[in-house]
Image 1 (spheres, helix red, strand yellow):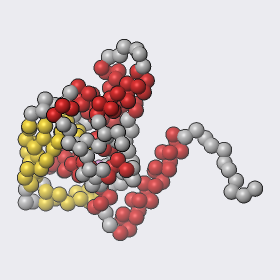
Image 2 (spheres, rainbow, N blue to C red):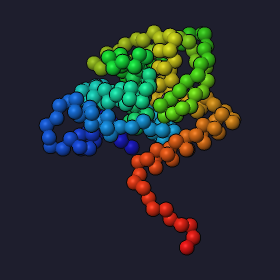
Image 3 (tube, helix red, strand yellow):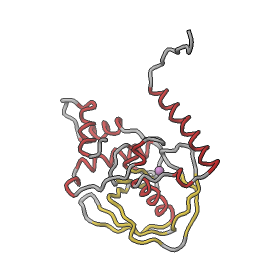
Image 4 (cartoon, rainbow, N blue to C red):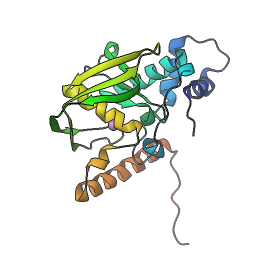
Length: 215
Ligand code: CO
């Protein structure tokens, strides 16, 4: 599987930029075009993602994050993780206001401390359109992560921010919303997602002539 950000950026270049000279923004737009939200049960969603290495903190990482943020906002999300756009690296974006300038990139996050208080609330996920599942999580969490310049930052999170970051961090370990559902609810989600994936596939395919099962 295509793992590195550089490869993703190069792929985007190849996807249509060609030999024309393009601005950085054009390249990000190309990346967005080539990027879709991966839906359950896509394999990329179950992988344990790789840490971004020190040498990978460059402009292609920034461009990837910009593209990923755009995909999140286009789909009405307040958080997205790299595996949801098919790249298995430990990167996520959170945006509680849905305003472009409020995108927060969180690279290589790790939980340092969690509060004792637990809160249960419904969560959604871009990889499970229209699905909501109740999830119990610590109300507060302290997360350490890297900023774009590779410096370590500490985030003290509470409320929705704490919830979204914990949800997105689950993605980096291949843990999904459906893992919080059991029994009938879980079966219902699986059925719903099968239908959605089938519909999405049909939308992307040119119409096929129907084949008769028997002559
Ligand atoms: Co999600």
